[in-house]
Image (cartoon, rainbow, N blue to C red; front, side, top):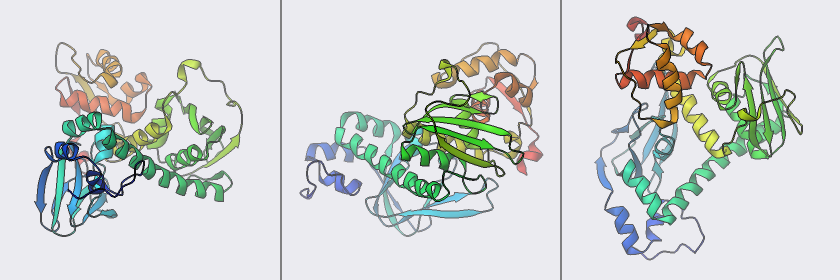
Length: 347
């Protein structure tokens, strides 16, 4: 391995530069868990919707990131990466499916580090954890800066046809302001309100939902008609309960929000429209995912007899993505059966 030219405290330019800056024993421990994949041109590394089971590094060649519309008929190349660049880390960190397809543009060598090995290295090698954390922060900073300038250009108010809620929240977070964002439909009826303290979302309401569930619902809904406005304020217009206060760091909230929005948009339209019904398949409730176990228990208690997804969603009063995450997980682990018209799924 070449001698490092990275000064102490600098962030290496890419993953290969990071390896060069490390002691031999450290980079060898990373090298030991890397699988080397030699791929020809136009070969798929992974597909949009695949489970996130690894992080990848481009050792040579060029790969491109392609997103597809939910029906698979339209595609768009959103990025390309070359030697030393890495990808696949966002889905691994957020535990969501792949948000895009990655394929080689030319003959390439790609290194693969499985999720468990990667997370283990993050814990044992501080330089590695710092590198990925800083890189993620830089990516988010650039996205937020673009949204920041866009919002300033319209004096913190505008049309929802041009800016989705996620972009608006990114911009306000980046500015570090304290105040309230309010969304209205064309009839000037309030859709939702979001209170920020020093750029951090503290309270949220969207329709009947409050707290994080309101944030998730706002992110996944494409409110194509209406307006938004942000004004400085020391407290929200409408009172919120302390129990509904949001206690999530801004970067984590935005990253998780991106994953939830893209996962939701990738679902078949009948599921997004809550067409179908659900009922139990087993006598006892078993659940391994602690993050949504409480919601799963509530859902399980309701489906002793088949019920429509619309009725269940209304009774649980959570965001559509949180609800469908549990419904699909319950179906995949054999706890319940989901009935949806297969002809509509194909459409």
